[in-house]
Image 1 (tube, rainbow, N blue to C red):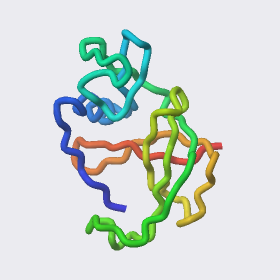
Image 2 (image 1 turned 180 degrees about the horizontal axis):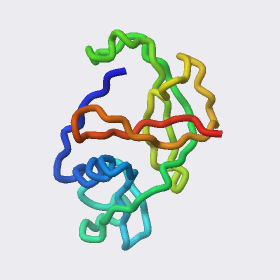
Image 3 (image 1 turned 120 degrees about the vertical axis):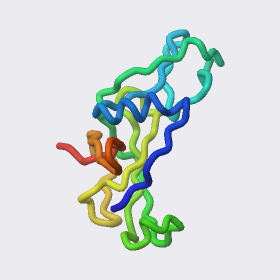
Amino acid sequence: MPRPIPGPDAQSKPFWDACNERKLKVQYCTYCNRRQFPPEQACGECGWDFHLSWLETSGRGKIIGYSVTHDTRIRAWAPEQPFNNAVIALEEDPAIKFFSNLPGVPVDQVPVGAKVQVEFLEVAPNQLIPEWRIVP
């Protein structure tokens, strides 16, 4: 399935740079010991901005839900519909969610509760994005 190519901004650039190194990183507030994603200008808990850094994760998670898209507005994905939209909770912090189409999983057969591992898919020269695969 074709994927949109990210357009990193100042806040998201460290995330996309890490993806290009095949690492999944989230923002981390050293003041209140909180992870957050998507990246923000300040910590969503304490409000401090100068305590934010980036922390590498294991890239493991669990499927907590899904939907199926039958009629997308994204033209590049229209030929691929219907397709899965799985919600992944990050192992280190289940409050952090990522989304995946779960390549290789038949439509509407998403095993909620299954463990997943991040992989990185090249969508353009020198640009990788995170994608998730079911693991035993």
